Image 1: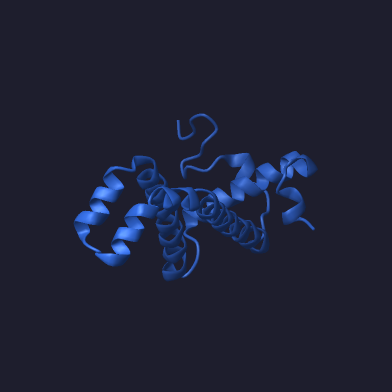
Image 2: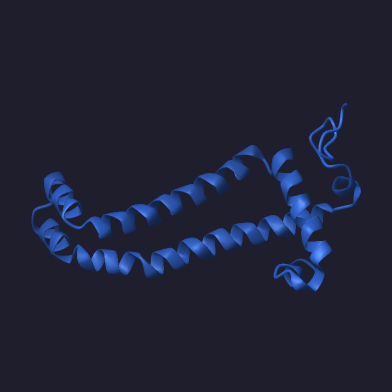
Length: 139
């Protein structure tokens, strides 16, 4: 009655959690996750922002002479793709900064995040060298 679908009363699946996962592995996978998020943000900024700014070049020139909120609003209103591109990049940057700051201010990873990383490490171990992160975790 306490178990349902292989999940114990504490919400953890029995066979996966009993295997040993070291703190070093958890930290390494977390570091790879942080690096991965920043790489995605940098790639977005290098690929999406230049064309978006290029679309807004007339608005930027106008703002260099007479910068008003209405000029910025009109420029963004008449260039919807540039607005979407800039908003997406700023949103991803903000999300990554908030996520990383939350971990720093909290003083490390939460138990829930550690559990998630443990499950990921066990998944990587099971797949072995076929999993693309295996070589980075176990050099």
